[in-house]
Amino acid sequence: MSATSTITVDGKQIDLPVKSGTIGPDVVDIGKLYAQTGAFTFDPGFTSTASCESKITYIDGDEGVLLYRGYPIEQLAEQGDFLETCYLMLFGALPTEAQKADFDYRVTRHTMVHDQMNRFFTGFRRDAHPMAVMVASVGALSAFYHDSTDITDENQRMIASIRMIAKMPTLAAMAYKYSIGQPFVYPKNDLDYTSNFLRMCYAVPCEEYEVNPVFAKALDKIFILHADHEQNASTSTVRLAGSSGANPFACIAAGVACLWGPAHGGANEAALKMLMEIGTPESVGKYVAKAKDKNDPFRLMGFGHRVYKNYDPRARLMQKVTHEVLKELGHQNDPLLEVAVQLEQIALKDEYFIEKKLYPNIDFYSGITLKAMGFPTDMFTVLFAVARTVGWIAQWAEMIEDPMQKIGRPRQLYVGPAKRDYVPLDARS
Image (tube, rainbow, N blue to C red; front, side, top):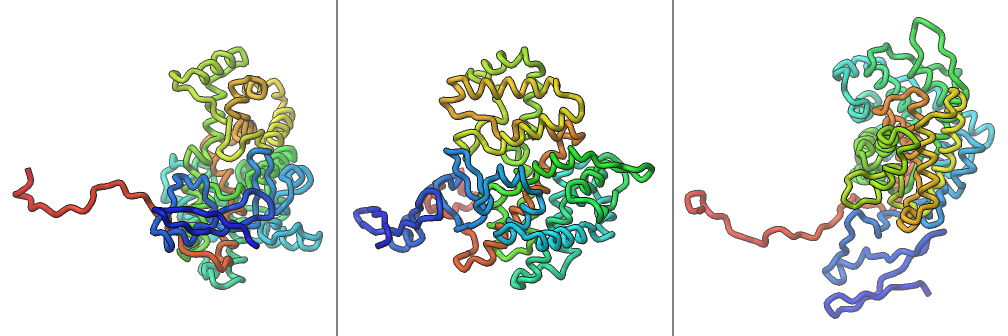
């Protein structure tokens, strides 16, 4: 017999079914609540509401666990590469050697963008924020690739998915190049995904550019760590946009726009600015005291997480990547890293942080790493978007194929004026 939950509304008692996932907490199915009681639930931020069934990503925030299709993030980041993770996200299983070779080939051969996109970029001011350029250019892809916008065609959905994963780094590199006044660099088919991206960002036509393998490996891991994160704000935005039947390029553009928010994708930039404000290890104690003072506006960025109430598993991996990049640059004693390490040690030992479960998250280290690799702070969220595209695409495709999917339509608790009559202008006091 299936489990049920009993609820009483205005003296009327009804039984609601309880659903169980593979792992994780059970959920109460309230789909019939309004029809049977005339009431619905109030859950600002949807913190206690499952909006869909999904097989892609699982998070246990209390235990600090992140799984992609059942695989621990630590194993994927340490043993695989980003395109293997992309294949896993899209198809639900790790590829065979032949499948991976074919997938890598298809992604690599789709990295070029339509040549008219070059002229599209010239419509922006040079000082435009790269994320503004990304929102526009990603949405504009639907104007260039009409052969992959029919969401009812499984083949077109797959072509659109491959195109998005392949072209996003090209658009990101173009946004960066445009912002610094340098010519666009075309992708090269003999390079791997992240090496290709780094070359498009940093090469110039007048000289040869050799990709640093340490940087390429580090960026590949960063992309894996950011590939998906369950039903976060931007992913929910993609699903909501997709529920209306919008084309995939428009849906991903909506996700990029949501990611731009400082509370979401801009958190690593905020964490880096905080470390720069602290400046030296000697100042850490003073700023920790300021963070504990309720009357002080200063807040420690890069600590705590909406979901994780334990150490963010991605942060452990990011810390290692940060050390590897700084060692390659000869900056093992970088003041920012020293500040970061000292803050981390305090957070793991200080009762204030332990009680509030303010553990370092991935943004705490990623900002330092990206800065060390030469990216300006306004490119941090763009890189996040490049990595998260595969998660958005996988979630969008899953939603399209879900027979239970309906157009998104959240309800509200109305607290405005009750019905009132119109008063003519000359009769109003």
